[in-house]
Every structure is written in C-alpha cells, then in structure tokens.
Image (cartoon, rainbow, N blue to C red; front, side):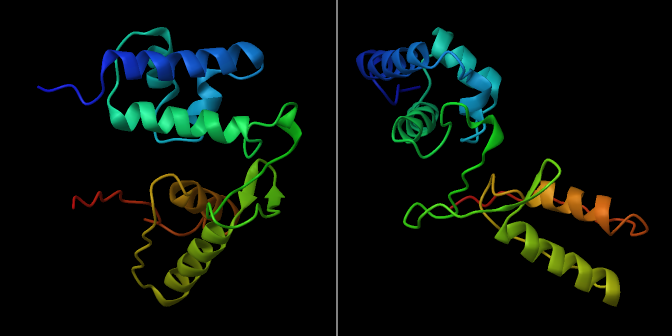
Length: 161
C-alpha cells in the first residue's frame, strides 16, 4: 500500500496541531473531533504519533485547527456560546437552543418531514452530508413530539462515487 503523505508532511501538520494545542490548554482531541468526522480517539492517536494518517485524517484535523485559529470555532471560553457555520461562504448564524439541542435549519426541516410522515403514515427520506445533525434531529423530534410514533429513526446510507 502506497503512503498518501510523506512523513515530513505528516510531522509538519502534527507539529502545527500540537503547537496550537499548547497555546490552548482548554482544547482537547475531543473538541477537535467535534468539528470533523473523526472520533476523538482517532484525533488523539494521530496527535500522539500513534499512526501517520492519510490525506483525509490529516486534512480534517488541520482544517478544524485552522478554523479554530481563525476564530471560527472553539473560541476561548466558548463553552457558553455556539457558532454554527452552515456554509463556509456564509457568515455564522444565531441558532435557537433548546436544552442542549440547537435548532438548526437542518433540524427544523427534518422535524417538518417527520411531522408530515407521522400525520400521513408515510415514509420519509432525509439526505444530507455527514455530521450535519440528522440523527440528533430525529432523536430530539422523538423526545419532544414523537413518543407515540414507532419506527422513526435514521438509516445511514453512504454513497460511493
């Protein structure tokens, strides 16, 4: 199997992440993992040098750290605030918070679909990119409105292309 990135490139990226994390002791691998599709264990192992990681792993971690450096995410003292970027091109939006759940546009749309399906005994399909909150939106809908509805859930289908 051919390596996607050289050791030099991986080590340079790893050092960039480590250096930033030294300047931000409040941030852990779990925090970085929240802003990419990687688990906190994967992020932690990569930062520690446990494995080299390919373009995807290194790219996702670096992207999250660079967004944090730019102030887009993980602002210092940010436990009380949330910044949600729906589209990289758009400015951050304010999002309604219900308990620990944030009512995003995706969550509202999924709620509308689930309401329609429950009312009309229909089957609905929701598609969106990984990590936008489809599963959490369904869980929150069931918690608030769909307790008597059986079978409302999410089936993950990954497209290869």
